[in-house]
Structure formats: C-alpha cells, structure tokens
Length: 281
Image (tube, rainbow, N blue to C red; front, side, top):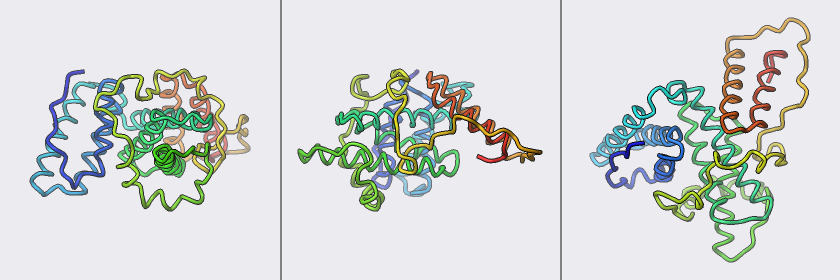
C-alpha cells in the first residue's frame, strides 16, 4: 500500500493514544484494516480529549487525512464498509494475539514478543470500542492482558521469574486500572517498522499453536461453548435484535475462517445456533 503522509509531533495531551497510533503504523503493511481502525479510534479519542487547541487541531487534521487516504486504498473492503465485519476482524485478530501470548505465558516462555502481544491485544480491544460498548468478555481480556504485560515486563526488568498463568490477578486487579498509563510507559517501545521476527503476526501462526488452551472461566478468557446445543422446545419468538446477534456470530465465524481458526468459527456458529433454537445466548 502507498505510504501515508507523516504526522506532526504528538501533542502531550494525546499521550494516551500514542501506543494505538504506533500499533497503526506497525500494521500499515501487515493488516491495513487493523491500521485503519486504530487510526479511527485515535481520531475519535483525540476529539474527545482536545479538539480546540491549535496543535491538537493540526494533529487531528493530519491524522484524519491519513484515515481518508487509507480508506481509499482499502476501497470496497467489507471490513471497512460493513461495521459488523470490521468488528469481527478486530475481535478475532485481538483474540488470536491474546491466545498466542497466553500460551507462551502458561508454558513459562517469557520474552519481549509475548509481552508486546499481550499489550497490543489490550490496545486492539480499546479500538473495538469504535463499534460500541465492549462485551464483559472483552473487558476481562483487556484487563488481564494489560496486567500480564506490565507484570511480566517488571519481573524481567527486576531480574525476577514471573509466575505463569493467571496467578495473582485477584490481588492486583485494582492496581491494573490505576497504573495502566504508567505500565504502558514502562513497556519496551517497539521500532516503527519491526521485523517479522520481533512482533507476533496472528496470520502467520498455524491454528494448532494455540488450539486447546485451557483458561479458567471468568478470569479472562471466553467461556467454552457447549459441544451440544439444546434443541428448540416449543414456539420460540425471536426479536429483530436476536436475528442481528445471530448474524453477527455468523460474520465472526466467517472472519475466523479467513485465519483458518476452526475453533473460534465453531464456537461462534454454535452461539448463533443456540440463540436461534432457544432464544437465549
């Protein structure tokens, strides 16, 4: 894709979106759809922070120019023209990145790549808010991923061996929210154009690498969908909202299959089937 015009220096007021913008830059070639939505999130968030100060207005104007240029380059890509497809794309990408990092963590393989994958997954879940309110599941994923990234980074920096898995999350829940900015600032800053070996690319990892990860329900991972979906018992009256949610799950499944992620596709299809046959999720 054609190179985008550079941005002016980031105003200090926009410090909270600097990592989202860096993630956008990192994905300009790897996944332009992710790059597009990261910039959209940065624009929307920046407008809420400060749209009146001259330096902020100038920065947002240039950022919106980048956004429009990227949108033209993507053309009629469904992930940009249809929000439901875009949301599915972002959620699946973030989840695959999260599961990669979680798999490395549980295996006791602590390194900068997995730390960055945890933190980037949390940033991408921030970005999903451009489509509306986050699900409880995504909120848990974001909180856990951000806590893990900060915790493991600090352990390695201090010469300590991190504890694998979700040990200690209950005790440190409150610190995560209070110290998110501090934790983000202390994480290693990746280069603007990292090599493929320094950053995890979800599309490059076979599904078998993270299939079968067992994550405690309620901690941070999506609850397992039952293998058997109850059959309809009687006349189920579905609302337009029910049909919309079922369609959303089917879109999610389709997006997952683009990554050859059979497990996620099956889970979403089962959710759709359960909703259509029982009227409940």
